[in-house]
Length: 267
Image 1: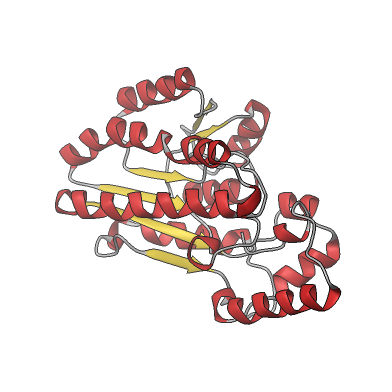
Image 2 (image 1 turned 90 degrees about the vertical axis):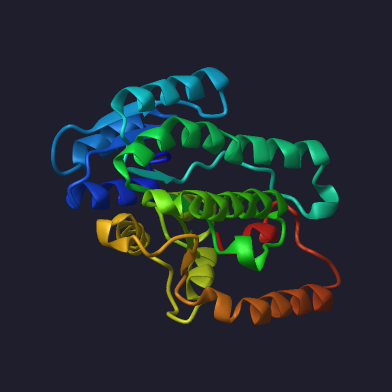
């Protein structure tokens, strides 16, 4: 479980452990990983503190994966902070860095894990993306680009490996209320974002974890190459919401600061 040290990743890890999985938690913060590991049902779990944008750390993870092969299930929610800015203020270098930091690691992990899965005739891959990969997000060009790139890789992996019993899917949450989102946004913004879907509330981490658990189940072998939205129906009203925000800015005679209101999109 890449990105299993906090918030959404931790919720997924707890659910998979409850379902009987033995987990390797991967993340940058040792203390967070240890805290989540202590909460997991069952035994045999482990953690590996690693920054997967660091070639040495990535190589260390891949060497570990080779040693413990076969790895039946890979779930990754890696996210390295990307620049928040409108496209007119997003430089090519910043965009390239966002893609390199959030996408490139997956190629090495695939090479490390696939041989064992092929030999076993079974594998499950789930990448945590975001609703904005399909919807777009103001001020989130780099974030949208890296999530869309991951989704394309997952579909290709599904096509290439399906005949080996290996599936690959994406779970795309909308706005999920977590400790991180409550810290990042004022309470009124959390409420507004949570209400901007058909349910009228934010998605809960356990609901995203349930979707992941569904896709990694042995009986989910016919579900592959798809993106499962866990949004509460955000996409049903996204265009209208964007139009309303645009109208408000026009009426106000200006645009929001790139670092503030532009962040108020589905994540």
